[in-house]
Length: 284
Image (cartoon, rainbow, N blue to C red; front, side, top):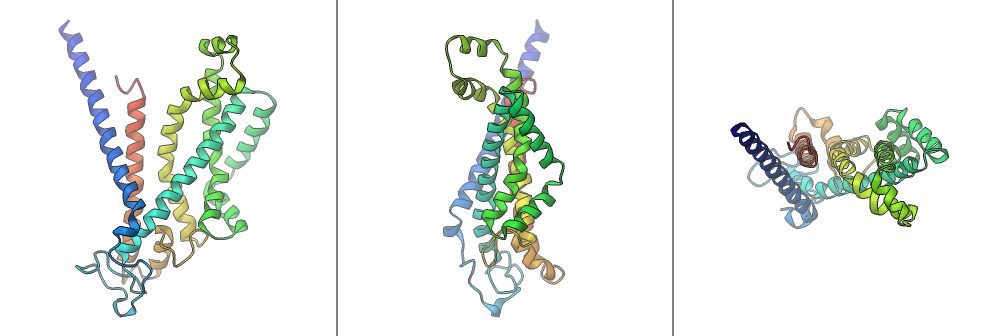
């Protein structure tokens, strides 16, 4: 009897720990998003204002992260770059998740003609290294953040399609689906009202965990000149601007690099906490 109470107490402590961890990282994420949303008002200087008199000034009281080769304040540019870097990534993940989940649900429900065609198409996209394929697509479309997002979206949806397909195939023969069919529910209603809510958890966790990967790939395209074009502040392009001066002015690379590291880490930890919270086995 006592061992049962001890086990129950341990499970309760574990659940509370997981919940507190999720709340903590959710708050950090919210602060990050708010900072990015209001970055324009938080910048101490104009992020695009040039002053060659203070070019490559090291970090100090007047410029917390130093200045770049054009005398632009790095702290202001990192803040300004967060808006594009974070929200472009979130838009990309939202598009990829929606398209991939829709394709996967269709394949899982109609597991014959549509499944064969769409899954072979996803195999084609998965056969190429993702960033190399994105470079090819972005090169064809040309530079710009919108074309970079499109390029990464083209190669990002198969992961979610395969996940949603497997989950849909598991759900479609469930007793509650059979009951909904007998009640006269249409196919669209079955997918949206019954299947989607039951597969949304794993899809959401995968989407949150994919934010960090997509952010680094988007920064990679900008670093290679296929994303945001100067003088717009974006973390990947800022690293590219400062790489030639890494030895004499390392803060020009370290500042946006640290911003990417911290942001990716927060989103990954949020995804881990969300996965633990939504997994009954992990919650005990």
